[in-house]
Length: 456
Image 1 (tube, one colour):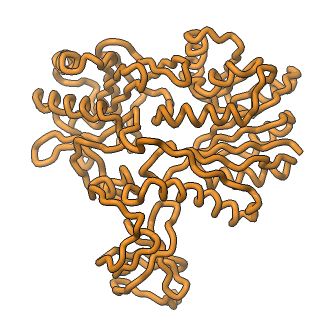
Image 2 (tube, helix red, strand yellow; image 1 turned 120 degrees about the vertical axis):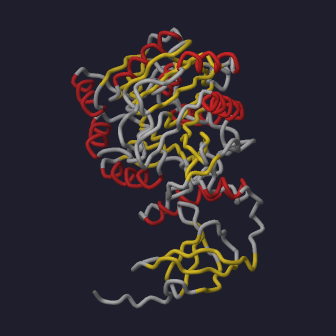
Image 3 (cartoon, one colour; image 1 turned 180 degrees about the horizontal axis):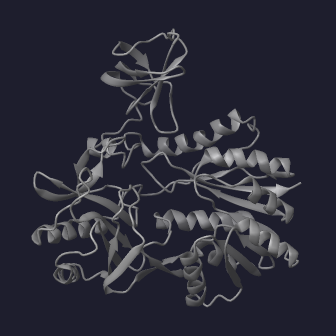
């Protein structure tokens, strides 16, 4: 194997200046054009680093000593950075918003789409304690059951009580449940030997309703002292109206198993979003930042310029959160989703909100678009809110074949968004307004955005 002729070598100590941040929030320093990625370092900082890993095109280094710090650096608690819960919390919030705007801009330039503008990111007034859902691992530490999180890129467990970006009431419920499990001497999951009982505790809480749900995820089919534990949770937390037991006996990183039993209360909680009521079950996909989700959906509706006369297709409708929001501003909304339970929930949510101008179908979006086209349905707007992997070529083909005036693309991954924009352009659709980033996940490197593509 030919030896790489690199300007740096492993364990070498160097003084570097940080010029940029990667999409993962790592500082970038260049040594004779060779990029080194450094955790927790920010642009404009000078520091001494130790090279830890070298590859053909880039390497990694560890900060040894800071010589000059960025004026945009803020003091943090190390555990949040270590665990990756809040990987950007050492950067001032306005600078985080600018980083997210630049993230999309840089990808557009790289794809030769530099002409597409990106608006400033819509941020939050209070960019912490925003998450309405927690899924925390449970482990045995020094013989005691603990809740916490794993160090980034490892399985080293860090016990935590305050998770910083979660609704504070959720953190309180987690600690209460942890103490009850300790009281009944329930064994925490041991990943190495695939033993023990409780793997995760999941808590969901309604932002407006204040209703809370607790899901105890176990490796075992039975939860010892289930009745007493359930009663203790209800007594200590009267706002917990749903207590569930989920069984996940597989050796997997997936959190929830396929079997969920109701221990007490209701199988779901309710919450509001833009004045609409939604039922949320343990498995429901429901956006985790309520205030920013309202802004995200409202901005998407405003950008679609709905007048009440339009036919809209929502191609990844989930439990109907966007569909129902759009139904109040459109003539008819057709929603499609591949998850059967989500479609049941979407129909139920339409009924709860007395909305009758909606049709929900279960299956692949491209299949239903072809069927709707055969039925003579002509959408004015197609809404897409895909997972991180973005859209398939077949979906882009099916959507453009229906010739809607506008395609509104809600994206959670700028890389796949930019890839998909290029493909839409091949079918005669172009970005007509600045892309609007929305900060759904403050203190992290994730960014959501809204893009409007119009038919030329």
